[in-house]
Image 1 (cartoon, rainbow, N blue to C red):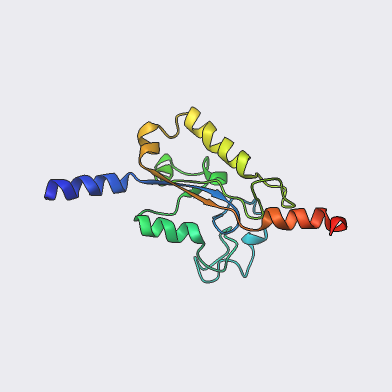
Image 2: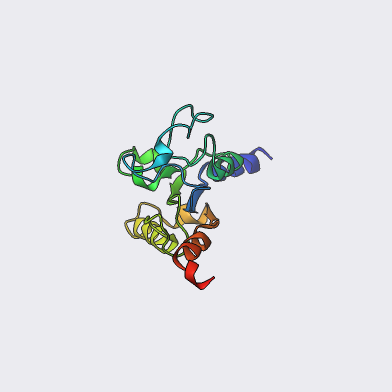
Length: 156
């Protein structure tokens, strides 16, 4: 039984979370100079100061990572600024305000986010074993609808 538990424990520690989507899961991909998520009141509840999350506290990514028993994956924007070991929990490609299609946010849409991920796989930042032990989180809310309505109000 101990060998089984040890194997499960090792497997769980290698688990990675890859996140794609919008503000419900973005943990800091907007540039500090233009992102409102880097200003108060965002971040007051968690982590105590603005952190790039479009919330005054945790976002869905934080909760899912906690449930999986791993740290929240690093935001794609910060991948070159951190130690390689910080990439072991996966990566967050989500940008607040985006959608499947281009939105008014003018940030990377779902296709571009997936392209970022694919490039990292091609660069061997993540290998087959990493992907075999990974979970994908996709969040797409109403930004595509809001953009459509904003651009097509004359049709209503």
